[in-house]
Image (cartoon, rainbow, N blue to C red; front, side, top):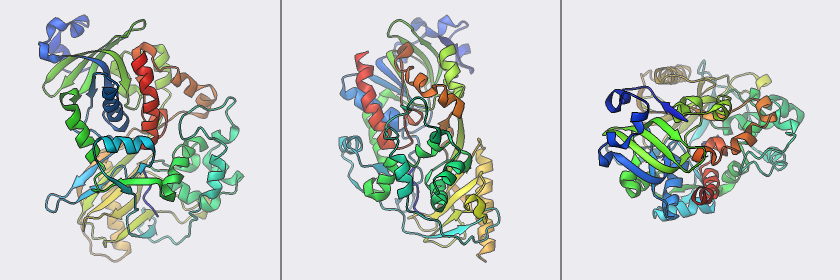
Length: 464
């Protein structure tokens, strides 16, 4: 198998005891030192693929920006590990970039050379990860019949502009769609390719199509790019250097005021160096717009009604050593039941693979619900030990080297919500209350497609 390419509100916390005793005081500039007041054209929330791309390109369009990112690095789903002894790197998040003009231009801006992506050179074994026992089956990998179905919906790569009425095939559970179009031979490969999706046979077909989309098929045919330095995170390191103090890392929005009738946004942001007041003309949200993330932005009924409909999956990556597993191999999770096309029931690791660093393995872990770091790590270690026992390997206790949560992953809504026009209503939020939205929930989990969507959105933001 190939690796799949992956109003007013005050939040809780100590900020209120530090800044003020009332809501209004939180936004009173006289309560802040001058260097803690940031005035910009656009405030960007989130420094992942979409937020970083937007910030760099808004500056090119003459806009001043500030990025608020809760992590201590930029990059979102892009994770790169560097071996402290050899300096060798391993990408254990996003694996490849789509070869399109936005990708080429973005990397050229930072003078980072790109090469054609090559899947890891490993031998693949299938096993039931609940037992460690080998599973012998031969899933088809020719996705041509799937491409025929995708061709019926040419908007898939670029938007959620779903026709009305919604084509009934799109709202079928994938299991029913597979039966209807006799796709059983490639069912397992669809599951494997739909990175991060759990229990895909119950997923709406449209959600699987948005993961295994025309862009993904193009990458399988050679349109995937990697960095010549084997370091997908390099672009975000350079972006951070360019943004400098305009990127607030390890920072979160605690309160927000957003106007209905004029370009005006005020944010109270908690940073490692204390509270800051951001005053901007416009707000660009690039984080997943779920209620937990948006609670401090003072949502009104229209916004809350939409964002409360989202549900999502858990997706995690783990780097481990001392696995006792032989180098040069990967194990993929499968079950013995042909009735479910050998697709395993999750949560669980979907793939455990050797990396380019000797002795270091990564695991991709999917779950239909949120799991704690302890749950994911202990389950992954248990799986490896079951593989050791089943293959008569030396028993070890694997050590976790790195862990990353990509949760909330693949935001989705119900078939009824889609039929009722959810995505049309979501699109209508662009510019509402001086706020715009980009990111995976708006288009795709493919960076190249996210950048394409964001590039088209930026002129609207500037012109508003």
